Structures are given as C-alpha cells and as structure tokens.
Image (tube, rainbow, N blue to C red; front, side, top):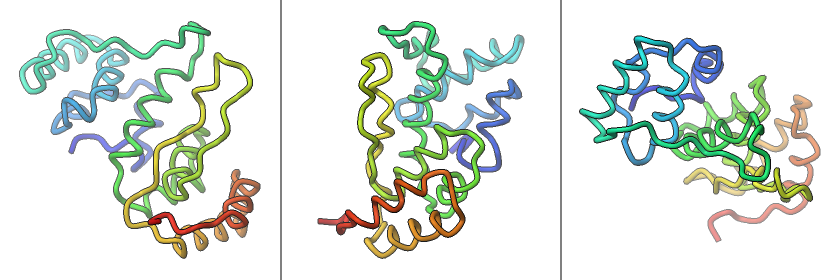
Length: 179
C-alpha cells in the first residue's frame, strides 16, 4: 500500500502540501479513491501532472475524481478531508497506530476517527444539517474485543485524552463488539 495517513505524521505532511508521486503508488484505485483524488488535487505542479499520469496508467483514472462538497455549506473546509480520513481509517489495520492517533494526534478529525474505529463509537449527528455528517461512523476495527475497548478507554481517561467524556460513556455502555 502507498502512503498510510495514520502513520508517521503523514497526514500532517500532506496537509502542509508536501506531497510526492510515491504517495499514490501501490494504493487501491477503488478503496483509496478519495485519498488519490485529494493527493492529486493538492499536489504542486509538475508533481500533479506526474501523479495524474500515474493514476491514469495504474488506476484507470482518466480524470480527477470530484471532491466531496458539502451542499449545505460549500465553504466547509473540513468536508473533503473528513471523507478521506473516513476512507483511510477503515484501511488502517494496526490498533497501535490508531491508539497513537487517537491519543496524540493534533488533528481532531484524525483523532476522532481513530477513537471511533477502536471503540465502535459514533458521535450523534449535529442539529445543524450542514454538519450532521460529522458522526465519525467507521465501524470497529476487526479483532477488537470488549476487553481491548475497556483497556483503551481506561488509557484515554488515565492520560486525560481529548475524548475522556466519550471514553467514560463507552465504559458505561460497553458491550461485546462481536455480538
């Protein structure tokens, strides 16, 4: 697989505009389409042209995928990134990488997706329709047991992570994720 955005501060690097052609290599044209589109759209020239050529050859993408746009708020700066993170958290299979992101990422959305993937938690939709998509619903990481979830929530509480209240709620409402 190409770039894994939940590892090694890759998302921070990408968001700051440091994108290279190797970031899109060895990705899955279907499963990583939002990431590929984001990388190409935010790359600088001439890297963008090189990436477009690679995407056409390897993934059959003759044109850049249309970015997600919030129809209720076209100026929503987080909408496109939200869907890239949602797509990629499902592709991350290492619980330790997700734990690190949930506890230490400076990017709220990345941390929220990692937390939700580890616990199966889903935030309630906002009352504002324009932002009701921000539930961070991404299912639970396969292999997570009820004990794994409890242990992680206790760690969030112990370290006073940004999701302490949610971790406490998860502990209160804990059920076996494999039921």
